[in-house]
Length: 144
Image (cartoon, rainbow, N blue to C red):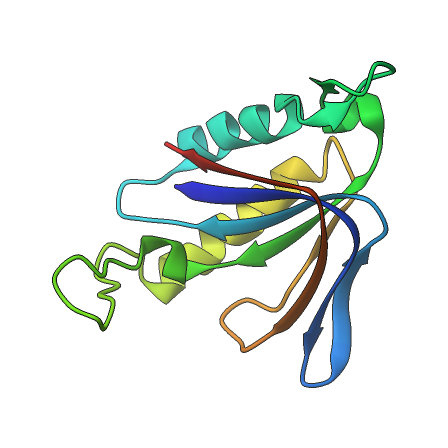
């Protein structure tokens, strides 16, 4: 499982011209799954996301997590996190989990995460337009 975390301000995701998810402040998460990912992977990643200390404290040092700082999460499915372009200019996605299993894990990830924080989502498996106000910019890749 891979999650690309971007600290963000105003962020929106559109599918077919309609907003499917939006946040004013928090994290945009791009979430990808691979073979072998399961509920343990999800729980591990939720713990990492919620406790990742990349928000500023009173001294402007990245020392607060999203629960301390406040904000919401915009979660976007992103199978291309498993793209491999080492052998060619055309990436291979064979390490990305198949659609049927990935949608189950993606929904479970968001359901579990929403027990702790407000979660908005994109539209799984569809083309989306994602607009992110990346603060910092701060972008962290988490992997299990």
